[in-house]
Amino acid sequence: MSKNILRSIKGTHDILPEESWRWQQLENHLHQFMARYGYREIRTPVFERTDLFARGVGQETDIVSKEMYTFSDMSETSVTLKPELTAPVIRSFLQHNLGKLSPLTKVYYIDAAFRQERPQAGRYRQFHQYGVEALGTEHPEIDAEIIAIAYYSMVEFGLDDLTIKLNSIGSGECRKNFRDALRNFLQPHLGELSETSRRRFATNPLRILDTKAPHEQEIIADAPTIIDYLTDEDRRHYQELRIILDAMEIPFEEDSSLVRGLDYYTRTTFEIISPALGAQSSVCGGGRYDKLVETLGGKPVPGIGFGAGIERVLMARNAAGEIEPPAIVQVYLAVMDDESRSRGMTYLHHLRSAGIRADGDFLRRSLKAQLREANRLGAEYAIIIGSRELNQNIVQVKSLNDGVQESMAADDFVAKLVKNLA
Ligand code: ATP
Ligand code: MG
Image (cartoon, rainbow, N blue to C red; front, side, top):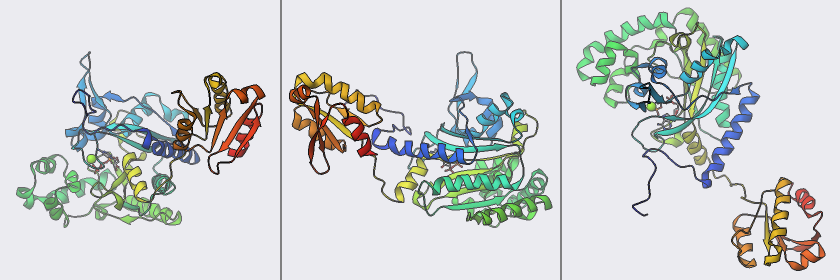
């Protein structure tokens, strides 16, 4: 490749026509799927005030502490390309007072996210997520619905071998006691912890539990688990959720190490794992955040949601088996001579208006080359016209599957093809 050609930024990807049809399939599936569950789409801007993420995602998270694309605009406002979608959705919910319209707000998004991470398989700097947020109830039925959406949206798209990991981290009350117990446990190991973990020991020791460093994971294997600190009400909420999930035939594994270190996360947390993804095995992360709306300046509103990585969902789907791409065109319009070109354009227009995927020759190629192109594009029929067809007001219709050719009246070949292709 020429040295003068500019290349895309590391960790970003073009979605080329060879694969964009897969993205469209997933997006179409999601729009229909979400409608069945009563969720409506919300779209928020690509960038927001940095402060939204500092407050809504949390200073101590990997995202805010080291992964954000942050810059000052001309008015010296610090803005950030959104690294996740929940905080923008809550911001929009509050700004437009959506809670006033209905006591339960159910929305979904399909969107890009930006994080400055080390690019590798399944980890990019611009990636895409779909997800849902339900705001307005703390009852476990909605937790079950959110998990069902995450799980069945993937299963219906053809993903297999998925594992749902589930935990409850209780509410604020039990968090303090757990934090104290965790500090007592970690105190003797402080010297072995990384600098980041030592800092978190002071600011927010729960964050140490989702460390990725193997030697730290070994240490925390014996740490106290939050389940033992749940209040009676937290315990009941968790129990009811598990009963509903069983009844809905949603398989899950309880995992007491699945924690979120931030104070506004409450009770239910879950993650979906696919073995097809190797090291980046997490397709989806979600949970309840009953204190987040307050953190962002609103009156208390309980909420729960999840975010799923679209690239990882597509990778996991690819691993589950080949899918035939749809043929690019159904009908190819070929012309034998220059006099037929303009009539060809008219017929092409009629075919397309009738809902048929149709294409023709724009390079003034030979008939043979045009028919080769028709096959390459996957067409089922070629329409062939020349001056004889023009004079008799007919067209030749050639089936490219069996090579059979017949002439049809120019006035009704489009209607016939619509029927044949249905
Ligand atoms: P990980 O542990 O893989 O870093 P995370 O905890 O940062 O994931 P979330 O913030 O919960 O992930 O995002 C939800 C989902 O978005 C993830 O489960 C994953 O599928 C996807 N995801 C997160 N970061 C990236 C990335 N850099 N590139 C591609 N997909 C990503
Ligand atoms: Mg991450």
